Length: 146
Image (cartoon, rainbow, N blue to C red; front, side, top):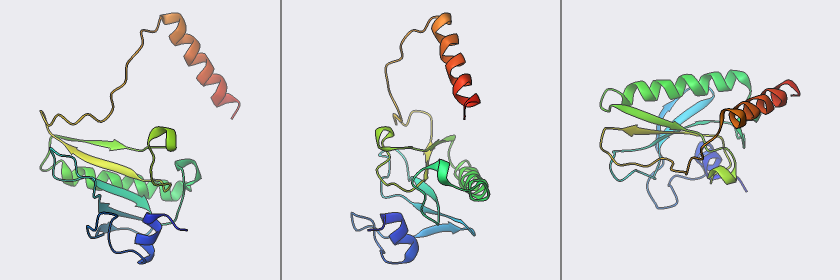
């Protein structure tokens, strides 16, 4: 069974799960953007930018499509910035990171001061310089072994 985004792209599906219409905002050669049906309470929309082909995670997306995905995202951000003070650009990568549709996609959420949208809240732990440097060394080691 195809994911809902692939069904949108293929024209098999015309509405979101709640019955709202699927409408493309902008189409490029390898990417599309559309209004999400998950509209934040204090804002006027959330736009998703996706590759047209199905890729479950960003590591699978070819570089030339990643480049277009980013330029498409930047285009949408620049348009939203005309009426908003800022934007959040989110990528949920994997189920444990709240990715509910297994098709790589960026969420672009317009933001304004005082909108009280809480994108992510987690408790931060105090980390010593020693622990911080240990984390840094481990990340560097992992990158070298890749």
